Length: 165
Image 1 (cartoon, rainbow, N blue to C red):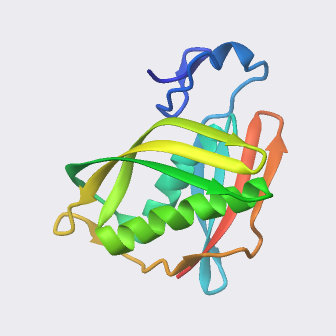
Image 2: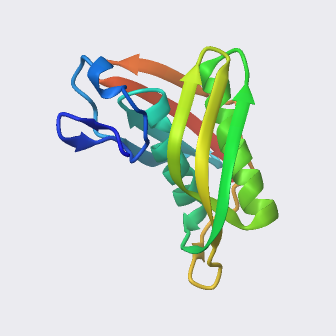
């Protein structure tokens, strides 16, 4: 069941019981791509740390190109541990990139997420990538540590991630 705050569906992430805890005006979940020397930057905004995961996933896939989901490919729990929130997001995106490269699979839905000090876990539904219908524009080689940051904003959080292309 998606999380709704003020009538807005927040990314389709099921976070039972969380809506009543949001006390600030939510930001619209969003991402943007920006040029960064020989690399590409991703700027991601969302109402909570957990809610950053869906637009971050979308931004990573957009950096690669226009990916079209194919057949349903099961579910997977992605779990990472690190000391800093930004490193957790980087490690999560690295897991997605490895899954894309090695298995031609992509996350299509994040059913639930936990993002707290030192720990990030997400229950994800997967699909294969329909390569013939997808448009692969760039090879994303890695998620870098360069300029990696998550900052609190008046409406939630903003993350900056640089990908090596």
